[in-house]
Image 1: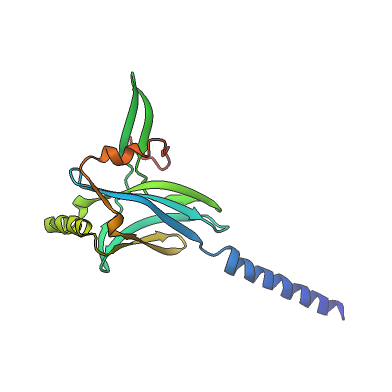
Image 2: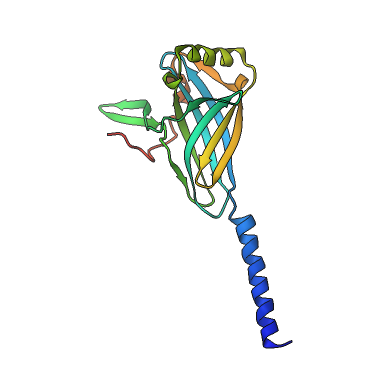
Length: 189
């Protein structure tokens, strides 16, 4: 073999390795787990506690989340960080401050994050839509499709309607997560 043949063979091997890295190691690999979700009647809010796991070698940013029922958009994230729950020791000291996370959520390579995402039921198009939304959850039939829009494409998951709780008092939902420190992406003033 000539030197030029060895150079060509080396270039071919490097190209195959590069192709493998692009197609398999650097592809979008985001998993989403829904830990719990609840509709709050009095506050007219719908909160979902999600886990995001970036299993790829590139960072990924979660920019938008939409909830569908029967292929129609029901809710879109409102993208605002809100104070959800406080637990105080007294004298102005807090045991816990719990926030919803406004988007975007930025995940470094091979990292995970847990967040509560808040959807505002008041954002439904018509007043009857809220009643329909609550009836869907009460009847416990079907599933909601969740589409997560990222910098590297869409990821879908579902929530079985039977797994969604209806609460009058949001504090019961949040008390379970008092140790969930969530101050990232905080844009409160």
